[in-house]
Length: 185
Image (cartoon, rainbow, N blue to C red; front, top):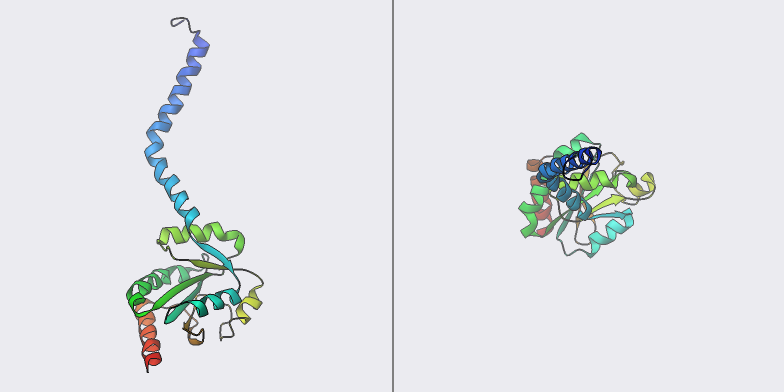
């Protein structure tokens, strides 16, 4: 016995203290994880129909809205994602706005939020709702629903460019510049 504590209780206290010691040692490692979870929870991801997205485009003050359709399960989409983020930075002062639309299933929204948080994209992003074909058809474009795909809309919401394949920053920048030049004439 140790000063009035029986040996069985003492062993339990030592084991409990040992568990807390491990948690205290691990807490600096767990804190970034907890912070990352908080960041993921605050990522803006709005469920939307095609009609809702088109209304947002028409009500935006942007000169040109670049809409990228992507999915977390699509390697080319993931590869080109940073190029769209860079394009937003490069062309923001010329009135260009980049909007991402995830075509993941709504039940995969946590995966979408996690990817967006990892990508440090803090602007709003949509996740498709409703039936796939109706969503595609409502955009009234050459889009078949395959991703990645990119549409560019002028300030009135008119489709002015369509890219039905993976792109890169150089090609994307060239197309944005071409559309801006054409619209200024």
